[in-house]
Length: 143
Image (tube, rainbow, N blue to C red; front, top):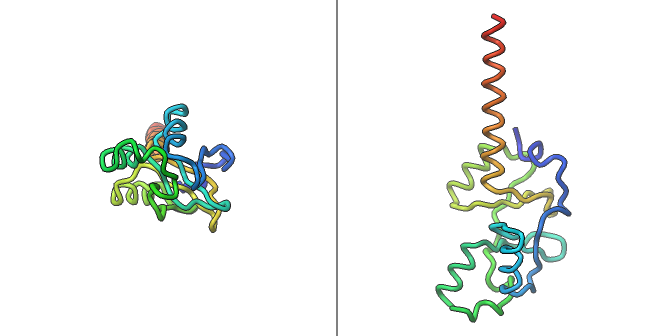
């Protein structure tokens, strides 16, 4: 299965994001209110960075509460690591493991068409494994 199949039915409008001018304080409020771990940071319709819980922790540790009034453009992790619709689930999981990240924007050219978490990928992979196991059980029972 690829990422495109996994996100079929989702729209990019469902992705919660923020702009490069959004203050850190506001982005933290979005993360908390929506109970999410990261936000894609957008500029002129394309993803230019990621702001995650880790970014909050690192900035607070290094700058204290002075970072709360800075903008996303100053504190986001950039450039973002992205995947395309045709990327396989296992390839995306390997990328996340290798780069030690938990969220990936899905892009189609320069336009973001989705945003996935490691939890999304693990669930999709488990669903695949369960389907394969069921197919094997059916095959064995009819053989």
